[in-house]
Length: 159
Image 1 (tube, rainbow, N blue to C red):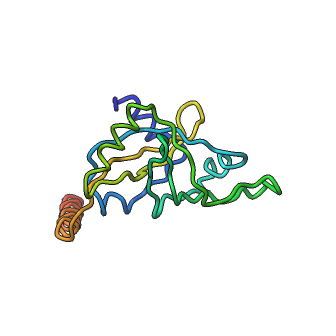
Image 2: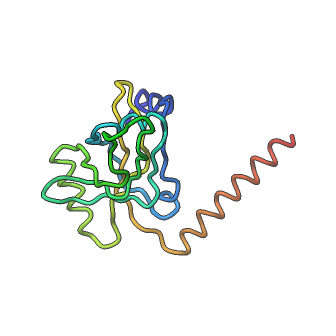
Image 3: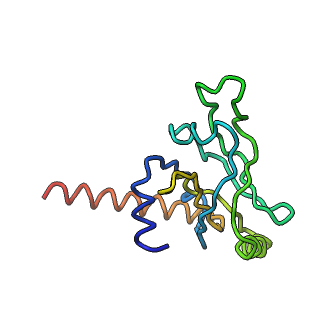
């Protein structure tokens, strides 16, 4: 990912993060994928009414899907509204899907969505990561590092 893409991602009006994923997993590789949406889902995402809590990706028949993503029904949607927690197809090319499929065959590896955002063209995109599960002592180490950073920031503010 180059600097321009990273800057656009930070400027995105909608950024739904999966905060728990970085605590539970080490990220090995990341990809940006489009999402196949229906009806009023994009309007709900633009309003920030989406959640990536307890989501994961799986590969089925050469297609990658995200399971458990919650996009709340659109308030003004009437009978056209969508189902909140349906499986949604992600758009990656075959080479990337094959690479992810081979990697997830190894024990301890999975695919998790880390960020949902709107790109410069107004389309919803998802950053997904090939992730390896952390052990309990790794989680404690991560908490310790976060606490150390907070302490250093507090010390710097006093000077």
